[in-house]
Length: 374
Image (cartoon, rainbow, N blue to C red):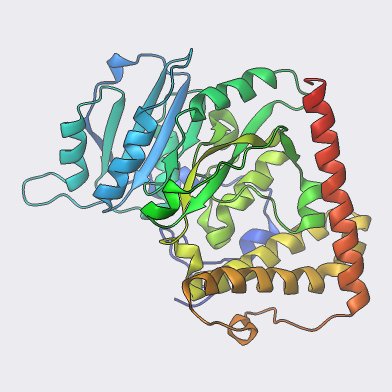
């Protein structure tokens, strides 16, 4: 499928027009309203008023899903009630079941509610369906091939309660996570915890080129009200849709990067490492950056000076990620609508210096707040 082609259930299309109206409300839940989701396992009465819902969308990955589920079930004790929502796109077999349903029945955990979509609504909009079905005030996401650390929910609770008196209410916690690709990697993983909560802002998106709110997994937690007000994830934005959702929520809510790592991310089987997906990511990232640059005289000047340089650096980052799997891609493979064009060394040097100063100032501010427990 070429760039610009549209499929309402496809998470890898890019509709440039959507970026021209990025902050306009779109009800993305209505796009799948004709598809029903049936509860095939669990009883909501077992947990009548959950404070938090862990949402695990899945499709045809039973063994990995079991690992993800077990990591969610084996959480350290917390003071709030919570549920696990599994939403499955896998078709039913001739007996009216799926492999995941059989596995969940064997686990027998009353905390799990297993829903089955009567139609495959795609990986993207299955996140929205999970948010619709969740009953918690907060919704926490986990990919079906990733893991939560045992203290993830305890740390999420600590962050939410600690940040209850902000100028803008807390609406989004982006999870820090460790990466692995094999069982051997998991054995040798060292947690990369921090001791400060980093605020993510729209101004930071302009300066650093990234919202840092992509990849909603490993305990990334969103206020359900904020998720609904944003209209849910909109895959007219293509594979950058999750980052755009974070950017939209920043307008009314505080968005934080967690201080502790909340889980482990399995990068080896990730769709975004494919060359075709990375090409679309580069294009979608550029469109988001262009929207950021239209917001003020300063942002327009910033884009004029450094827009192409930031675009080049993003291509270089995506290129390194793709080549982690031995793809051997080059810059020539990223001749998306906005090509790689050489810029001056002065621009690159100034951008690196200014970006580093901005990041360090944000870290210093975050450390200061952590020290005084603000």
